[in-house]
Amino acid sequence: MLSVIIPTFNEGRYIERTLLALKSQRCNEEVEIIVSDSFSTDGTAEIAKRYGAKVVSSEPRGPAAGRNAGAAEAKGEVLIFLDADTIVSQDLLQSISDVFKLEKDVVGGTSAFYPENGGALDGAIYKFANLFARVAIKLGYPHDPGYCGFYRREVFEKIGGIREDLALCETHDLAMRSRRYGRFIYLNAPVYTSLRRFKKEGYLKSLFTYIYSTLYYYLKKKVPKEKFKFVPVR
Image (tube, rainbow, N blue to C red):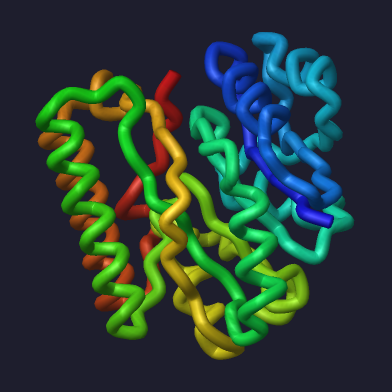
């Protein structure tokens, strides 16, 4: 079984399209969808239930806590973490399943990620981000941008799940810790992500925060909440 885990807090504007894409998958495996909701007030949980997702409650402490709460309720051997505004390509889940079946040394990975309805600038930014992820992974520094990450359940549990003390880069950290048990891969089966953070915060601020927090993590293995702050974008 594959368990798809989506952390949410007031994601009513986005979650339906994400779930619809998951329901349209060309996948031969049994799939469960878990929406780990932090007491949304905009109907997120109701939309999720309408699409057959299992809704679990998680404390509003950010996406790391939501992902851990969802993983604790999951039954699958493979855990797939998606953002609530991430649209998956039709063969993504089957591709993930095939990798884990055929390549026993693979413990986790991330997928190619592209902007949904983006312009030339967005395409250039994401092209560079994908190149960085591929190169980092090739060099032995697993890099999970967070849009779509997948892990063998046994490895996720061995490394203690996702660190909730990090303000940002918790998915990078999870990928880095997974390498002790095997190979982390970049899967060329794309997902398409919302540009809402760029649109609301601006490109300069968004990119600066991402690059600064990533470098800070790689240098110090922490991203303290006193220095960085995760701010949801609606």
